[in-house]
Length: 346
Ligand code: UDP
Ligand code: MG
Image 1 (cartoon, rainbow, N blue to C red):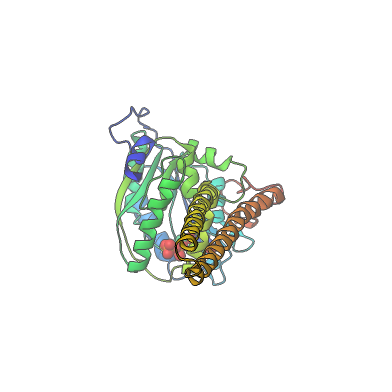
Image 2: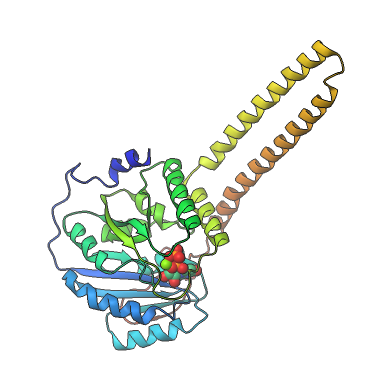
């Protein structure tokens, strides 16, 4: 199903006519969120500046320090002092990867913008393939993972299941087996930055915007050093956010659960009536157990329904508060201020 949906506007190689190729040299922005990445950051920068000139574009690299507690920020400052193509945005605290990427996107000036992790899991060479696609007229060239080195079996299975379920539940075509590693055209970045919503899940906002999407297949490496910043609990929270921010399906599913429960209740009533009619009080014990089970089930579904509504209410309340998605403490180097879509407070 997700594969079929994908061909709607995502991954339509050879399907619909593309825009004319983009020939200009142009500016390539690379946006990199960083949280406690002291072990990798120098190696990452060295690889990027070694590989990316082959793209034949001018380059700006934007590192967003997302409230690191180690000396990542000092290392980034040193990189910026050596390399005029580098901008460092220091966020005022840890706002999370989604906010950090959004801040980088808002600050970028490129004709094409690449988002990638700080840990070299996504090989910079793949960016060259993305630029080639972009030059051919593709608006979003997203990295699609053929394999993922260094991940546990549990993470691979749960991520694959979640991606497929998510693609079914959201009301527009959504690529699977993909993360935040992608190249987007300026028009796509502007469309996403202009959205007024504060809580953002970029993996679904970019496909939401539409445009021409195509995958670039690649093998995802293990981290060169350091550890993942996502515990299973943080991943679960991110999955919940992704679902509630992008889809009404959880509310609809509570209707399905309520309908299922109504059927169980109806079945129980019919069985209880039949038992007492056929065998006087012989079914009393059974009926008591059945009533208890149905009552517990009903209470669980009702509680879950309230919790689901609560998830949406909490997010609506956060949006109504209107607090910015991120707050910048300081910006080092060239580029524009990372102020959208935050309010004036940012
Ligand atoms: N990151 C961030 N803020 C956070 C957590 C992570 O900016 O609160 C950055 C992190 O430094 C990395 C990227 O987001 O560049 C992805 O994080 P990580 O590599 O830990 O995730 P994984 O690849 O294991 O899913
Ligand atoms: Mg990573």
